[in-house]
View 1 (cartoon, rainbow over the protein chains, first blue to last red):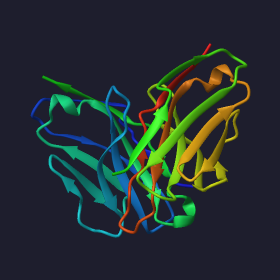
View 2: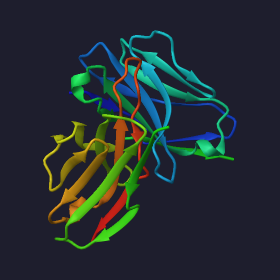
View 3: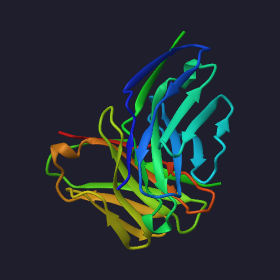
View 4: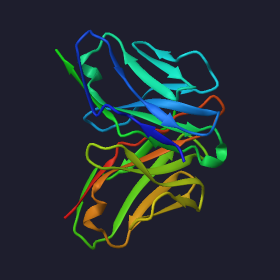
Length: 117
Length: 114
């Protein structure tokens, strides 16, 4: 079974600074997808960024980028120029590429990010 | 465009009472549907998923059950609630497409069993 580990329960960053959230995962599969979700106080789950394991290039979405290290099974999220609206719980998630898995996501325990003005 | 509706948003129920949470999806066909539970300050735990009408897979043994009477309807139920059933419940859907697709989540239901 796959597991996802986020070792940082809480992180804080100054507005306009850069912060990196860590995520490691364990799997025996070679083809899968990784995601970062954001959950603000409203508790709505919002996709931040996705990464396909077969792609070597790290995904980027505006101020959000990932450092995907497949051999190390590491998938960190970097937030540049942090904004107050980035404050939220961030979840790392894994999904198998096998359709028989039902496309279900396995989540980490989350990292609570605080942005200080 | 696709949308997902989940209701109610909040619910307070006494121990031993029944439960029915409903989730519907619009704008897509034959989606995979999911029920997750989130304890306070914790990650999401998958409870059930469904790849088609009447097809339910349970991830963890529990006091809850799920049903999918229609293609885009997913229901979470219990005959008798326990205190430990309190939590935040999220419905989600996805479609398997090469290139990857994320799960899209509903707004969630905060259930308090008293």
